Length: 389
Image (tube, rainbow, N blue to C red; front, side, top):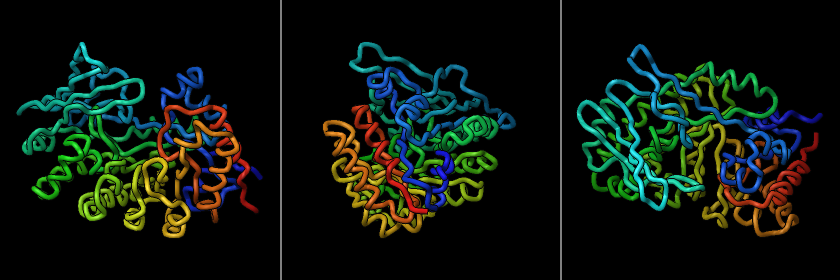
């Protein structure tokens, strides 16, 4: 019998064999929904294409016993953000900067012993850092002493899970730094200090890098340990700054794996599944990432999208240890080709990674521009990839 979308996705995440190939996408980007889908909501888009739906929810709560409270001036949280947690010793204030080509905001992080700041620019597609928060080595001391550590609002997560039911799965991510960050420890640090600067520091001052990573990891530990009882189906950890198109396997082993491995173990103690996200090169570190103990790995970015993944080889090497999510070349097969070419690309992914289940077809990370006809072909062909009973 046909499975519900939730059961299908959870079966794959649990390294089982579902009724057919699960097909979904990562975050649906507002740009795509507004430009190509007439302003559909996320869930309307999943229904339109008959994909297996995902809903994302990452509600934070303050620890009032420690004098924490919600940022009263935040407005709508940004991408990968939740409601910011303030204390009398940690506040974030936004200062719009006029007369710029892009929307530009300086964020001031105010503490009793000084102020840090960073500048973020945005366009219709995305946001990026133009001035990093960490400008000298001593800046991390202010974070270490004063930064708040958000906790999961378990009640809010479970309300979403109850309402979503069998519709699909509930995803979240490990908390990121305020304003702009990533779920993984190293990846968060890259957002704050700059990727190039942090790589150089691993050679010039490795102990400082470890001290910085421990500060960020401690904050994430508080969040992870608060997840007990939250009805998530899977939470994301990681990010692209630890892919092998950015850092070497040696740096991954020394500065990434130890910190995120510990977070994964704590998440399992809290009853949660973890998907480790590595958009970019993965092949040299496949076994290393799998050895960190995640339940799933993503995004298996193919060479055509700037990665290095041979999906069939990856399946042979780690397919019996984790659920694999991704592998589809959205740049070449969701735009600028025929529906037949899109369908053939889906079949190649299924033939490479689908055997024995434990595989979820998904674009290798976000897409902004895509032909809805090709997205329809992508989803329709995946639904035809079935497993014998």
